[in-house]
Length: 119
Image 1 (cartoon, rainbow, N blue to C red):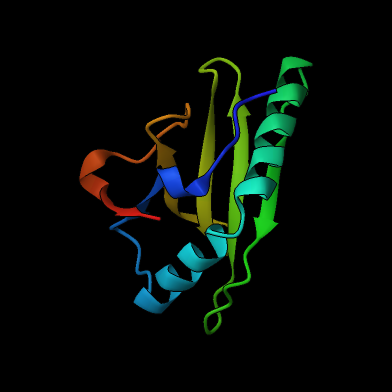
Image 2: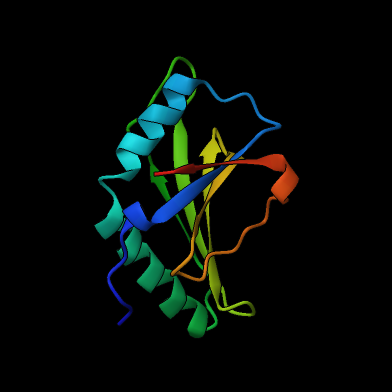
């Protein structure tokens, strides 16, 4: 079993190339703060499945509907990098990533394209 995960030790890298309402960012952060246990379960599950050669992606709907937009968190373990990618998506389109200094999370967005924000 992995160490206990806490979303409070992570950052969101918002994609500067996407239009994301400030109200939506606040709602996403607020919902993420309640999801440490759920994300930990997904982290453990996706790694276990990948090690059994069954790559799996977990998608959670966030309670953050703002206007016409709905948001999800998508979690995937990449066994070749031994790291997870956790994306925040707007109707399936990535708008940000969650990264951590203590957990092996992949950063797929280029530094010049992101606006980092503490959770």
